[in-house]
Length: 393
Image (cartoon, rainbow, N blue to C red):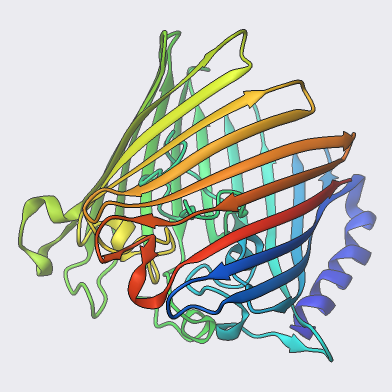
């Protein structure tokens, strides 16, 4: 951790020498959560978290730009599994306990380097290399095609984790784009990533085209052979977005692994949904469905960062009403269709002034079966209440 601080301090000092312009921006969240438990769960628990994301952007000459970002977290209590911890420490864990951190008298703290890359732009070609986000597909909730930076549906506010890699995007004509990319192997531990023998590198191509009615993206990825897949893996993706009366989206990624020959649908991860606005845009609804094959990219990602148990069918729905540009209320629900379990969330947001907002939210897990994924009765249920104050600068 101290080496990250030294590295970023060095970059902070050297970047202005080559940069024509520098911008510093960031986000600070202060979150307090309370949980009431039933069954075997604790009767009462709490969590306090202070989180900052700091970003630096600097122009280098007329065509290049440097990006850097890191996360700072300090927390206390037993509920250290909020969106920022899930994102900034380790998407495969549910808290600070499985990640490196510093313990103070009454808090635990950690820092993570989140972005460190350079982008070179021209009229027909963009080059990006470093620790960066590399997104694919148009899915709004599940997004199976977004396999390099998988989102966590249960923590929608979490920032996407970056990858070490490079991409080259070609624009011709203006409505079309082709990207060639490469990414370092995905490992479950930082030590494995540093000491990797090079197995599991991913190389691919993605092609996008835009029309008046919507957009289409096709994706192909090859993952080099490794012990878990001695013949390598092939992945083919397709994502479609259509803007008609409804906003329609379909996103799918199929993984073919010769060593895991079984039910052909096991390698498929696919989502489909829609969104719609009415009452002059004040009322907004969104719904999306996910099919999650047992050996698909959604199930196979490191410890399943989507946060889902490997079951086949999921659904998500959201409705939001805007009282004004500064105040809204929303109700969302994550559904495990196979075990009839539900995770409804109610939220109220108000922007006190430009750059400062407050959000109050509550979650009430429900399940029909004895051991539903989102409300496991065998472990007890948690009814959570969260207050978050956010500052952007």
